[in-house]
Structures are given as structure tokens and as C-alpha cells.
Image 1 (cartoon, rainbow, N blue to C red):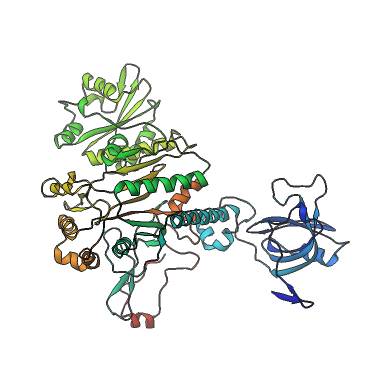
Image 2: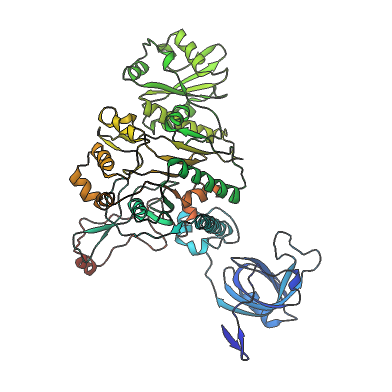
Length: 600
């Protein structure tokens, strides 16, 4: 605050979104960026912009020569301070698109607070701009309406969530960001320790162990907006660091947490989205049913095209591809693509690559053309088999059947991914609604590529019932867990489980994953010891803040919802990081660089 004639003189009295017709005749002071300038000789207009809106400013050479001269000199993105009098715009010049469109500010003085270079892209136009340029000049990009509104959406969603949990007696507690490393999922980001040479902290992929320990400490209900770090290759909906809503409760069962997830996210969608939910209450599918019907544990229910089983159409087939898959206990999973019997070879080749991307060796296609079933592999099949394919699939004339023959997991996953791809590219998805679904009864453990076993969700997820552990000695894949996931529009949005809270059970699950008692004590000693001191049953979930916001905003790029995004390779263009450190810093940490760092 400055003094003028002995009285306080604030830098601004109003924002650029404040002034209205009721303010006519009032003297106000605005600060902001020059959005546009229109020069009409003795009359100059500018639109002055800040976070709150835009106000038109006008100056005339006849009335205020000094202010007029100053406005003639300013350019786009200059930061200025304008004092003047609010007046109603002349009839016929009002702008109904702006909340301030009924008035304008007649400038009496203009102060340039800071000029600007010509920006690298337009701020006053929502034109496409290369992502790398936007991230490098993020301070310019954030001034654009779309970017600003995405930040506002994120803020309001987080505020809504925070109030939701506080109203329900949850405590917001921050957990540490320097923990013991244990890359049980993605690779850890590691941090060297100056005080403990040769030892390293890790940045948390999730505060999983810490939030369980909070429950063991009697906190009972916890949440936080937790930062999570994963050194993995980013995707359109996954990045190296993100924020997740992290929740844990004591003395709860699976239904308690699933009901909380449904209530919270239903409220978020109804508050912030313009699209309604397809169904309330949400449908619930077991993992087995979701994979059987949709080939996905995060199915998009906004369109049909459910998977069908064609294995029965080949009881004694001579076609080696199908025969060998069935002989190994596999299956033939398929989808019927409506009206695409005339699909080109190029289209089918493209769809084949989608299926191969999920492990399929190839893609079988069968076009229903009148009474004929056309297929590149028709010569290997009998007329009875071709007829059975039509019958088993339920395909009609003009439809196309696409199938994968492989082990159940690969066949269902490949055809499920193809289903989602075709639903989006062929316009089958009903984009006017949101599809929310809860998936539960996941496998407790699953195979690793080397033939061992690992956890399906995380190593602390409890069995669906204690009796499920009986399968671990004979058929581990049959053991079900208490895990549950929430999928929104075909995207995994949140997930959690009821946790193991007895040491003997936790050690039994570790054993199944090939973790000895000694190794478990070293890697998970804190949580195992805590289980010996009266640990209660607990359960919770975590959901990505950026993921729910990107769905609400209708964007496929998760980085749009981050204030300072990195590139797809995790590079920070704004800060030019990661960067080398000095030799003195390396020496202090007891580190040396082996090999020449790759150029970005």
C-alpha cells in the first residue's frame, strides 16, 4: 500500500471482473495485462485482463491527453495500472458476452508497471500451440482462458473434496516425502543422503504403508492430497509425478469404502460436470464378469459391443491357430462390429496392431455378407464352423466379427482394448453421459512374466475372506482379494482395498510372492512390527486428482491439469531440469557420474 496526500493508495481498488452498471460514476483503479488494443486516432480502446475478467478501458486525446498517449504506446501483455471513472457504454456498443460488458473505464491516468516482449504465442486467441512451447512459457500459457479455467476447475474440485471429508470427521494429515525405497510397482525416484553416505531416500509412489500406520495409531479417519512419484514412462493419462486423493479408515468393511467412493464421486460429477451419470446407483461388476463381458477391468459402459466366446464354434477344428490355443486351455474371444463388413484391409491391419499391442499374435476377421461369411482364413475352416461363428457371435448381415485365439487373459485383454478403440474411433460411445462402474473381487495374486507370483493391487490388500488363502497352496489364481476399483468413462479413476491387519496373514501373502521372512522384515519391518501392537481392520482408497479433473474437463492430456507440466519424457522445459550438479556437490554426497549423460 502506498500513500498519496497522506491517505492510503491501494494498487487496485477493483479487479477487471468487478465493475458493473451500478458502479457508473465511481472512480476505480484497475491493474492487469493488456489483452487487446484498438487505436482509432484520437480515441484508443484497450481490454484490460486479469484472472477475474476483462474490462474495456477508453482514453481520448481531447479529454485526457496524457492517458491517451500512454494507451497508444502499450502493447499486448504489458502490465499496466489504470485509474479512471466508470461509465455506461453508449447504446449499441455493449458487449453481452462479458459480465462487465455494460460499462467501460474512462482512463484519467495510466501507469506502465512492466512492458512485455512479444509473447511466443497469442494469449487472446485459443489457437492450437505446440505443447513443448506452452510448457516452456507456462507463465504465458496460464494467462490463456482455457489453461486458467483448468486451474480453477482443479482448485474447486480439491476444495470440494477437502470440505467433503472434513464434514465427515476425517483429519487431513501430511505424510513424509522421504521414505525407504521399495520398488514394488514402478521404479522409485531416489534421493541421496549427505548424512548417510551410500544410502538413499525414495520419493513415495504412494503413502500406502504410512496411512495404514496412521490407522494403527488410532487416527481412525485420514485423508490428504498426497504427492506421488513414479519413475516410469509417462502416457497421456500418466506422468512421473501427480497428486492423489489418499483416504484410509479404521474399523470398516469393503462395502463401507465402496459406498464412500460412490457417494463422493457422484457428488463431484453432479457438481462439476455438464453430463449426467448413465446409472445411479452405479453398476457393480466382479473382475471376472468385467473381463468376460468387456475384456477390461475398467470397462466403458457408454456403448455395447460386449465380448462373445467363439470357442464352441471349433469343436474339432483343423485350423492350427485356433486348435493350438484351445488345446492349451485357451479360448477364442470376439466382438461384433456393427455395419463394418466392408472394412478395408488397411482398417483391419490397423486394428490388428491394436490387438498385438496387448499381446495378441494376430486378429481373425469374419465379414457377414448375405449368406456368405468372408474371411482371409475361410479356406482353413469348414462351412459348419463358419456358420457356427455367425450363430455364436449373433452377428447380422453387414457386421464384422473380430476375434483373438489365445490364453484367456491375452485374448480378453486384446479384444477388450480393441473394443474400446473401436468404440471411440467409430463413434459408438455416447459422449453425452458419464459411465461410472465399481469393479470388485479382483485376484489376490497374479503371475509374473518369469512364472512367479506378485500382488494384483498392492502387497497389503487382504483376501476377500480368510478362506481365500486356502487356494495359495494349490491354485493361487483362484484366491480373490478385497480390492475394488472405480472406473469412469473407461478410465481407472480410484481404487483401494481392505488391508491385511494380522501379521501371520501378511507374511503368508509375502511368502506367496517369494518374499522370505527375513526379506520382509528388512523391506516392510515398520508395518509388520505395527501389526504386533493391536492393529485394527482398515481400508481405504486413492484416486488421481488430475485424472478426475481431466475427465470432467473433457481433455485426454493429464498434463493440462498440472500447473507446471513436464514433457512426455519427464523433462521440465520451464526450469531446464533435470540438470547436472557441481563436482563439489557430488563429492559431498559421495557420488560420481558413470558415463556421459544422454542429451535430451
